[in-house]
Image 1 (cartoon, rainbow, N blue to C red):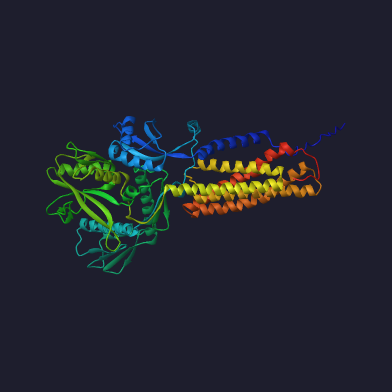
Image 2 (tube, rainbow, N blue to C red; image 1 turned 90 degrees about the horizontal axis):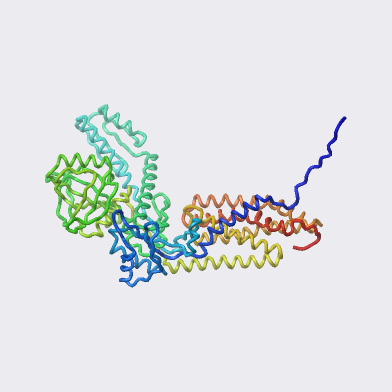
Length: 604
């Protein structure tokens, strides 16, 4: 006996979204909405005062200093050990920073900050206003030229010293080694046969140097690959050190980016007194310690232009300094406390033990422009002291004129010496008022664009137009929420242009869907069937258009910098949010309202 099953295939209901899709969409919108709200409140200028280890700064001290300078504040409070002082405007913030720096700079680090004006409970969700770029916040942009020739010269000098050291160790005579250019070395010999040690040494460096053997003369030139490697390493290290220096200055939300082969662009939003930033960022300084000896082969002038004779080889370079702080000695004179790494400490201990009772000089080196606008090193002996006892990895240098000088030297040493000299070749300043005007202009354009599109959608699509407006509003909120969550993302004036553009593209999504629905209705289908057809048939077109634009935006972000990246960032986020809100968001509203409507020949 055969049993035939007449089990019918179930047909999925038309215009239905699963409950989990509604829950996911709702959760995403609420989360991003909470992240976006503080941006609409904006932020207010503030200073963060971070007491140094072992130091104490009270609220009373801060209030009294500011009151003495007649600087009004909104609030002064302590948050996790940091004193936060808020102000009504940026002018008072900058005045307060100068006043506090003069009084408590030795006791605390002072940073320029911006506090959210939103209610404090938003902070429990980690919600903060979106970070603003230089053109919206106001501040300073610096373009730095990196002298890569100095890197090549230093590399060549190191190779010359290495070859000469090998010659001395092997006691070879009649061989001269000289540098003919920043990337070339010539070795002249009195015989065509070089010592085995020199041959081995040269062969070791064949991946870095190109060798041309002409019998009694050997020419060395840095290879193209090595030049590229040196340039990339120098640029990367310089950028890292510059970021450290900016952090030491208490400048937040700064941007340090490479521009071209030998330039670095720095943006300092919120900095409206760039004098100190320029003097420290643009400085290329290092410290070295030499044995002072009347028979020394090196002569360097001290602060009073008196020549000091030094042994040519430095005892210790600044590369081994891991920390430096300014302070005052027992007599109240400025000094810099130095701490060395283990290798530097061992070198200093060995040298000082063998030279007790003898003088040691501290040489400060910085690069300055000469009369032909070329960066050249300027050496100065800032201190000559007699070694009284064995020194370890901690000691101090004195002989400085002011505490400000001691602070600047300590900052430069603490943040590191630049690998290559730099020169500020361009400076562009944007005032806070101009930044505020840019914000108003940008968001006014966005508001007008939204209003114009809303009028069009309501007039042309009626009830569906209202749904599209809700989708556009959710789209904008999602973009701002994503921008807040994205690490390192800032909103710039081109970024606002990207917001306007993506809102317009989101309208295109709705137009494509609604026009497909109209076409189906004209063919006599029901509204429910037309809605299902409109979303399904328009999806491929919408997806293809957004993917091609997304590829272009990613390329723009990868290749561009600064404002271009700001535009590309909002464009990428806008494409993602327009797909979510334009396709799934609007359908989540339309389905329960008209998804079961079987009427025909109606207008939308």
